[in-house]
Image (cartoon, rainbow, N blue to C red):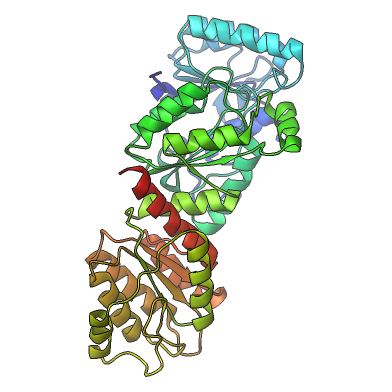
Length: 464
């Protein structure tokens, strides 16, 4: 396993190609480190280590003294970030090698993804770095982010919240958009890694590092191609024994394969082959970008479970839809035992018209007390492995108090997963945020919640 600590836990960073032009990548990277981000958000904080801009034509940028070359910097450099024209990158790499940097990120494009000349330049750079045993991320990438240490070593516009999902993406543009979405939705990341052309470090190298990262509880991957399938499978099989991996594979069609080749110079290969490799490696395949993060969120926060699920809802139609989605995905909605129904009756909270079956429709006028009775009775049953809770907004519904009931139930039954669907918007927001703050995933769509529970069941089956 390659030692990547100097990249992901640097104390000193050189930005080679730092610029005074606010519209340039070199300026964006430096500003992200010095001030935490270009577009301010509540999660932006300056990087606490030492930052050294390298630009022979400037004396100072953003209050930091500039150096003509990396060799002029007095201190040792853990991480060198390069954002210069591709044609001069190789000469800069030779200086980095002499400086004995701990790791390199090449942001610059114009290598293997461009033409044969670019491919040759990329190969020469990698050859030199490997001989010096210096790991490389990129080229042609966005960079990396680690929110817990305020490390925005990228030209991503802002910093997402800290969390326990690691996102490894071959596409920098997708990562950029996900960061914006994550800020809005308070979705936390332990690390975001974009690796572009994967000239040196590939997805399996990052999997091996993330396996030992205490902040990471689940790993989400966006990949276009894997050059060494056996290495990927070896790493994935090892990592999935302790941490779940969810993957979204691009290039699943003939047209998609053509697009992949021009994007990062990867060989996409047959999706059927990839899908088979994922299954053999214990990796769960996602359907869409949204699905990728929905599944990762559930896997990072909830225990895995057997395929014996119950549903509580205050909307009959929602229960029907949930039953349909569960059937489509092979989720077993267990039949409620007579003894369970008797216990529900004894709570004296059930409406005379409640469904008396699974999904358990506790009727639209359900107050928090009725939710509490239904949830606790079902979770207490040994034959029920997990719970999907649906709340629709009626005039008597209290989203916050319902959330308090769910949070208390989760504390009482920590070994059973709870997946929530707070349907609605403005008036449900506070309740949703209460749930998410306690690590209880909530989804705005029933099928998403069912998919999340499916992933927990699938993970349990894969680890048996």
